[in-house]
Each structure stands twice: as structure tokens, then as C-alpha cells.
Image 1 (cartoon, rainbow, N blue to C red):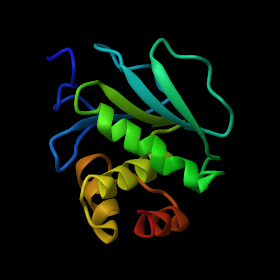
Image 2: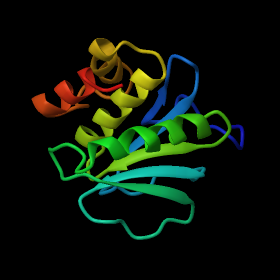
Image 3: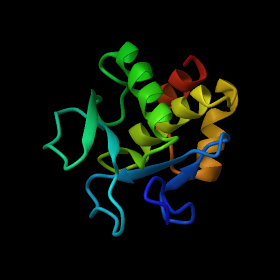
Image 4: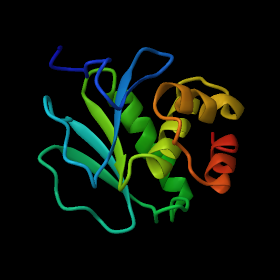
Length: 143
């Protein structure tokens, strides 16, 4: 495995249409074995404990939408840019609702039409991604 990207066959690793790799995971689960991220975006209602790698926190309650919806896009743009040369991850408590929603928005930034992004993430990351109807609606309006 390259020191700059994930193993594309590893659980939770999503390949975007551009070929960039992003790992999604649930913070309630043990951290996967192997390489650690170099950058992460964490979607939690409270600021998480510090990580050993650079990270950004987006305040986001479970089953809801980001508290500051405008704050999500710049963080995801940074993650997308860094995914070209670094191991990056997106995570929330369970790794499905908030993580799936953010990954769907990331797919939009990577060129997937907003109306197709949730389907792409459900097919390529997890069928359980994007748990609530308002999360799906948020993605369809994301730009």
C-alpha cells in the first residue's frame, strides 16, 4: 500500500469518480488496523478528543444536519484536495448517517450530479448511508 492512499479493497474505503480514496468509519468502533489517516473530518455534536493527525470538526448532531450548514463545504473541499496526496477519512458515531451524508456531498464536489450522489454512496460505500430523509434532501441541494 502506498504511504499516501488507502488500500481500495479495505472496508469503508470509497473510490470517488476521480479515483481519489476516502475512508469512512464509525468512531464508536475500534480504529481499523493498518495505516492511520493523515487528515480527518469528524462529524459530532461535541468536539472530539484530539487525534494524532490533523483534523477538522463539524458540529453535527446524530440524525440531523450540520449546525452550520455553510461550514461543511469548505471542510469537504479541503478533504477532497488533500485526498489527492494523503490518506483522509470522514467519521461520525456510527459511520452511516452523517458520514454517508458528508460523503454524498463530497461526491457532488467530485462531479456526481447531486440527485445521484446518495445512490452512488449507497452502492459504493454502504447501503445504510444517509439515514434520514432530510439528509438526502440536503445532499440534493448541496453545491
